[in-house]
Length: 290
Image 1 (cartoon, rainbow, N blue to C red):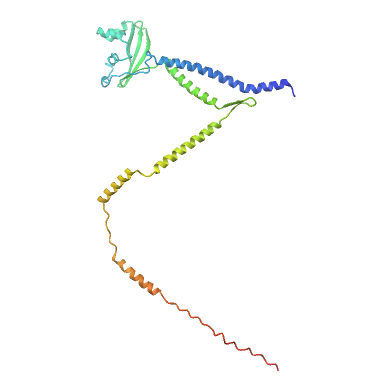
Image 2: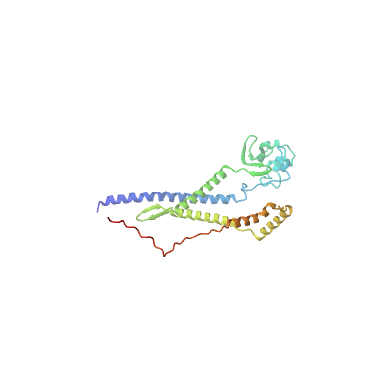
């Protein structure tokens, strides 16, 4: 029977080989579920009206005449959804003051941060606390007259994590279909289905190619044949066939052939000589004995 402790130890080792990876997979799936929940929450946040990362704005009448002097007036248009009309820029504009007076006010304001003529302009939205203290809130860039909001670091990381989690979830779902388990054997991988699927895909591709080749080799339609006949008739009218006469020397050939055939006919007479059967040869002379 053997030692029961040794059998128990071997069974535990055998089970640990397969149980530990399974625990790892369960932990990974839990993490994936938490990431998916955060992803759904972030998607719902992205669909809200406060998030302006998914929209753009432009005014085609201003695009040909945009320059660094009037780009702020273009951004402060009433139809621009990125512009907040409660900012200090509106106060300065209503009082017809210079934009340099913005530094003397406190609150929300917009400023031209970067210019790369003639295609790129960057405008910053910030909250001013004092003459020298400001807090950036958002950046907007204008490319070829179209206004976009620059994404913040959190939005970029959220987007990258969402795409990564999506691909990981698809990879784990596909890997789970290849795992097998039996109480006597344990866990193992079986990839025969993928081979059969690959063969089926190759057969489908070959059938599609053969059908395409057959379609190419099919005869033309009645309309195409009719059009081809019309074109051939037009070409025959434009370029008629010239009749070339045969040479006169060829007319004597039949007579010469008949004469040669007559001369070639020669009667061959075969003479067969036959000897008469009634005559016998003379007897041979026998020598005399003395």
